[in-house]
Structures are given as structure tokens and as C-alpha cells.
Length: 239
Ligand code: AP5
Image (cartoon, rainbow, N blue to C red; front, side, top):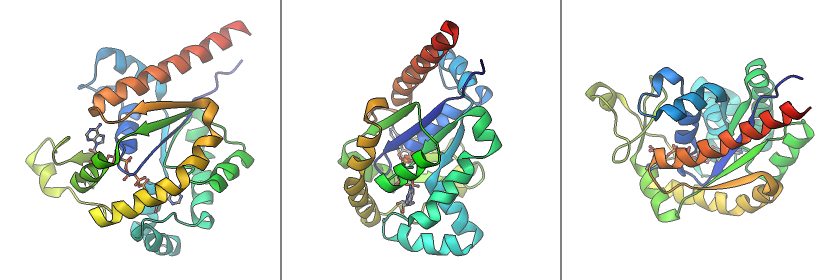
């Protein structure tokens, strides 16, 4: 019987650490020097394809496409981009040969019950839904201090995760929606939609305290993923 790859969703408020945790989950073993040995072993097993709705949209904006132009208007206001643009974009990535073969780690999607329904209708069901819980007062500080390296795509924070070298520090950029004013709008949108999504995946949800350091948060996620892999392994062994 063929081993089925993992299908994981990660969700949480703006700046709760989704992208940061996805970096840690999908990190290549040779880049994981800062992690403990036990994590390195697990990372080799995960090998998931990271699919982030926000990153897909920002790539469309960078490409100057019609979809990108429309999406930016909504993102500027902290609102959800219409399903006509987002749904097909995510579906195509989930259907990619790499995602089918290695499994996926879906970040920031679904964000509404209609997106969750569309996914189910396309036949995409996750094994695990990770919810990062972070108090709102921490989120604003995380947003305004966030910086991105345009060369590697890596996420930094001026205080919590500063760039490793002067060279990186001189080239990092800020996201156009990372202002205090815009994050408040994004938080409002999140509050309006989160319950509908959570109720869809209640039975497979694991709540993670996202307010510790990024490695503390990762240790919790790593524990859940390891457990899930072991359960799947046991099931395979019994048939
Ligand atoms: P998206 O890009 O998904 O933004 P978001 O949900 O607001 O989340 P962020 O990317 O801001 O934060 P994150 O949780 O990944 O945090 P990060 O790890 O970077 O979406 C942007 C927009 O696109 C939306 O507003 C919407 O318009 C549109 N969109 C996206 N998906 C959509 C969908 N499905 N449907 C319709 N529209 C959609 O961390 C943040 C900062 O904190 C970093 O600086 C990091 O270094 C730091 N940090 C992280 N973890 C820790 C820690 N444990 N301790 C200290 N600092 C930390």
C-alpha cells in the first residue's frame, strides 16, 4: 500500500507566525544548523510543499498581471481578495505534481467558509489544521518590525529575528501592507472570518500557543507532526 503524503493547513491572525513556522517546517536539513538534532531528523521526513495564498498574490502583483492589479486593491484595504482570483490560484498549486507527490503545507487558506467548501469540492482534505494563537497586542509589533529578504525570501524581524549580516540588513524590504493602520484592518477581516473556517476543521485542529520564541512554537508543531506521522505509520503497518 502506497504511503500517502501529509496534507497540513496552518492558520492564524496576521503576523501570528505562519510564514516563519512554514520556513522551519520545510527547511532543508543542511540549513537547519540552529535546530536540535531531533528536529533535523523529522524535517527530512516532512518534505512538504509550502503554498501560501499571500505569496501567490504578491507574485501576481510583482508580475504586473491583471489579477495582481485587482488583488492589490483589496490587500491595500486589508480585505479578502475575491474568490474568482484566489481559488483557482491555490487549486492549481495543490494540483501540481510536487504537491501531489510530497504533500502540502497550506498557509493562509482557506480564509472563509466559501473557500473551505470549494477546497472540499475539489477533493482536498487536510490531515491536520494548525491554529497559531497569539494575543493581538503582540501582533502589531510583529507586523511593523517585519522585514523580508528579496534575494532568499526569508522573513526577519528587526528585534526578534534580525538579519544575520550587514549585507542582508542593507537589502531587506518591508511589505506594503505592514503598517499599523493596515494591520488593524487585516485583523478586523480575520476576526470576521476565523470562526467559520475553524468550525469546518474542528475535529482535526491543534491549537498552538504562538507567543513564545519561534523555536518554542516550532517545538509544539514538530511534536504534532511527528505524532501524526507515527499514527499514519501505525495504520500502514496494520493493513
Ligand atoms: P498574508 O500574506 O497571508 O498575510 P497575513 O495573513 O496577514 O499573515 P502574515 O504574512 O502577515 O503573517 P504570518 O502569520 O505569516 O507571520 P510571519 O511569520 O511573517 O495575506 C496578505 C493579504 O493577502 C491579506 O490581507 C488578503 O488581502 C490577501 N489574502 C491572503 N490569503 C487570502 C485568501 N485565502 N483569500 C483572500 N485573500 C487572501 O511573522 C510576522 C513577523 O513576526 C516577522 O517579522 C517574524 O520574524 C516575526 N515572528 C514570527 N514568529 C515569531 C515569534 N515566535 N516570536 C517573535 N517574532 C516572531
